[in-house]
Image 1 (cartoon, rainbow, N blue to C red):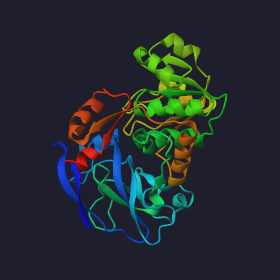
Image 2 (cartoon, rainbow, N blue to C red; image 1 turned 120 degrees about the vertical axis):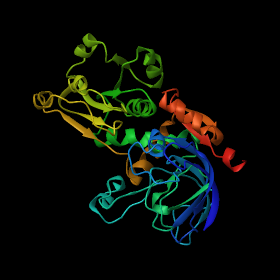
Image 3 (cartoon, one colour; image 1 turned 30 degrees about the vertical axis):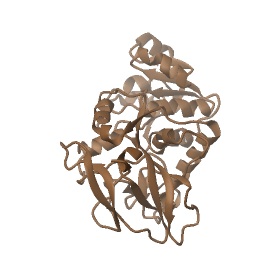
Image 4 (cartoon, rainbow, N blue to C red; image 1 turned 135 degrees about the horizontal axis):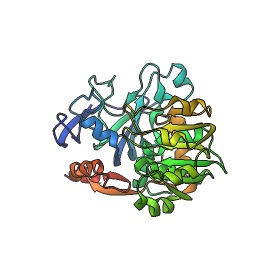
Length: 350
């Protein structure tokens, strides 16, 4: 067991400040990682502020972790010291339920363990995330990062990336499909990049006409302004799939009208109650509304390999750890294109 530097919050109203946390000694199947970069996810902010309830303090967030292997256990076979690796939203699961057996650890029926705010079976208490110098993780939950792409910009792939990749793959998006990505933010910008790379005709659906140029730079073929009633009507019953990344309560009815018969809109952003919707819109076209949560380890590795092959990374702004509270404010004000990544050297040098 060792103490390492970290940044965390003491309670729901406190800023993130320096503190020391304990990391377990390396067990037989563990990998110890020197953290180079850690992305900031809106989930970090929700957890620190206890927006969803159940936050355990002190809270050390961070589940978009990129680093180098610095030590391995005697039973580790997939990694060696010096490898470039990542850790996403999960660090453990039961390994035995049907979901885990199908490589869908995020849906573990006995409760997957989050990288932070999860149950720490080794030290007791709760898990601490990547706003820290190092982390020790079971080999099965460590991911190999392609060396050929911008290392720091890969960090948000481990949450924003897999959150959008998983539904696109599950619903088998392919060349020629018409895919709408609703909302251009941290999730939406990755949805556009992935759908484009998979060969789809990509339409960015947004309330803000000012985002049109950025959407097209990211790979959108068209931009549909959802406030434009006439334009929405022109696109009605024409989409094979809608990826809805809007992170707050909103009206689904206008978007359901865009779906073809038997098509699906998948929600990945709004983890809260939604506005009422009209059942007739679903019934009259046998349409589907679904949800999707990150992805399993196997699928996340497939995404990372795809990113290496197609040179896909997130659009980021790099910050020092000392500026994390300012970054939180900017995220809440939607003042970032499109994700923050912390350079953890700033923590080690402090």
